[in-house]
Image (cartoon, rainbow, N blue to C red; front, side):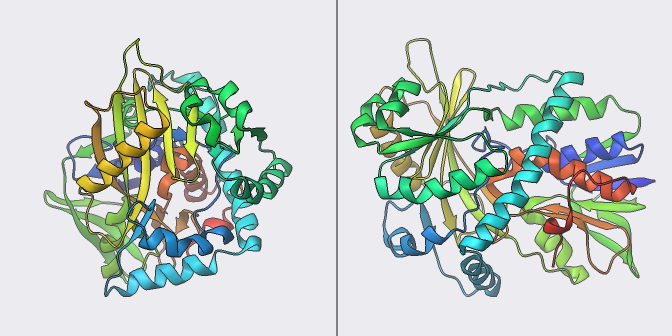
Length: 415
């Protein structure tokens, strides 16, 4: 069986790996000559297996006026005459209920735990080097009301197997001493000891190396995909600038490019590109950088140690086109970082921006496309692409091969 996977980010690479493990012949195609050149290139670097709360939650609605109107808002919204934007926004608001959030967290935890176990299995067989650090994650709150609002969800996630612990302000500083500069501002935090950080780009390069060693995998990188060739309920080929690639099955795992790729087939994916930013800060032995993965809940800024670098990711811009770096947003981010960790030298920080392909309820879409016999989707992981990639790919591969499913696939179907 010949399978063509479109997209060589972390989700596409993982999909190709697990499909090849099932004994299928796989061609991985991407317009870039190197893997992980878009959303996977310089993302937040957090592997947040126990912290999968969706962006849509009840507390968001009260914050929206401040976020949407404030110049220093972590979320910036630019309304456009775009029906897809408004459909996504309405679906987002419908998802901001306590019942929906609890249901989503339970479903997402099943997928994230599958990913966590898959990473352990992969590394046991193939010890890839991607600056993996398992030191845990600390989410800090500057406001006692915000911390109190988060506490019931901590209890809920504990009941589902997540190891999360509440700390007061001094407890946060004791755990992560580099927070001392803002210690007096901290109401407390949530510590998740089992979380990790890693360099997604290097992980993707490691997967590429593993795939390149397999005779049943072909890497068609630097090949532009122009469309999908349909015959009735089947996609028989992937059309590229270098000719058609025949396929018995096609997997679309191409991030936001998946939307225009599938539109001519009558498929409307409920994805919207949320632009996020990151800084990669080089470290030397004289700098005291965070040892843990740290998230500033109020400012929506994450800090992830990656070897001799610190990855800092933040912000959501909605209603923008492309992944261009907005200098004003980077200036604001650097100001916020300097206030939190004044010891960091940001002079040589590398700025980056990328589009997170997100569904309104934050759950990815994994499974066969309705109306097709052999077209499969693995998209919409949003800000959790690195975290969910291996689990998403294992679930997809099980569906495509007809094997027993590792988890319930129903929550991740396109409806």
